[in-house]
Image (tube, rainbow, N blue to C red):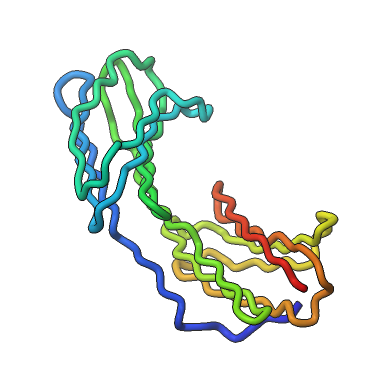
Length: 188
């Protein structure tokens, strides 16, 4: 596989989703979510082990969502409040200590864009966390046939030429921090 010239025509929307979590009185948090386009919001709270504590999807599309969340039944510990809209998500790390809510950090994520054009794969990814990013390609037997360290820059664009690759199925995997995204390619 050969690297294809970088491309400038792939565009990704970013910054559409906004999440504001403000600790309120006692074990309450005021949550305000907004998005530029009408969407449904997928909201979840997980503990530090990945167990789902709360999961909700709004029923009808909206531009904003506001609600008070009561964290009084949660034990002291670390939790992740995640909001997902379309290809974008925001994860807020929250610590609860003796009933007090503390916001630790917020991570914004946008799914990468994979585009196949005449046996040329084009990839574009906004790496908000600027985490080390790697690209892998596996053949149908799960053999690694291509690997590339894409570093930790904010904007990642990369291309792969599949025109001389044998016929068959390939899985392209983008790994960035704890996030893993995959894209299937079929070459005939």
